[in-house]
Figure (cartoon, one colour):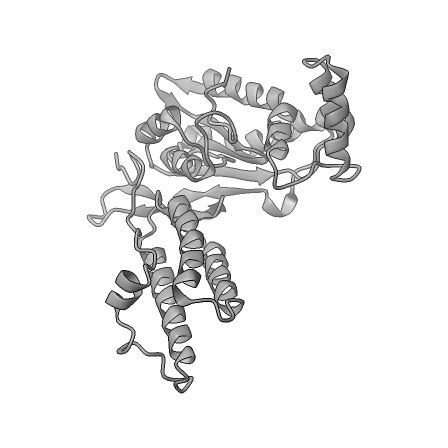
Length: 324
């Protein structure tokens, strides 16, 4: 039932691993991709060659209700279901669909189905054995098209973007111009995708390259802001209960980003959390504000007594950072 294109929000797919798949596609591609999960995505990641190339990164903002309903009506005849769909999409206004729920990614999959098939045909047509000169990845409404960086493929990235625009015209879809760009990783350019920054860097020996994937600064600032908000609105809540709330936030954030090259980002966030918890404890003891309390509130107290989150282990996907 589910096609093996690594399309987001389908069976065995998740955002955090599609990013990994994108990193594995770094053989010099132009790509617009979201992160995916599952055995097929892991295999593609492990097979990818991070030689560098072009990435066409983009997304779209509009879904026309009439087009979406026509597509659904071709497969669904139950008037009650169609009526329910109409009621759902009306919540999002005259154009687009409500965000944040399960219907939004489902609508994107239905809306872009023909586009997916078109680029899958391009991928197969341009393949040379196991080597794929062009590949296509999508997660909901975020797209990445990878194009080989070989000199014989010069200009292919721009052509891929043009083909994408042509495929979207009949759907009444316009690309988000602020999020659309062609990135040349051969020149050291990087781009952000689904919370990660991706760039091509040399190995320590300096003789090869691999795709380095780290949590974006915005993602790090975002989780810090959530921690501050939990503490700021904690009132007289016991410290252990506040720590439980903090742990829930940290667990979700870490589980998402642990598949990347996230060691430095994790250290940064962990140090920040420790500082905020110690500051809270110190203030509650009516100490002077500048006394953060490192000596009084040891790591043993934070982690063994309060039970602060400690599962910061990195678990990169197979093939991540693999050089060829």
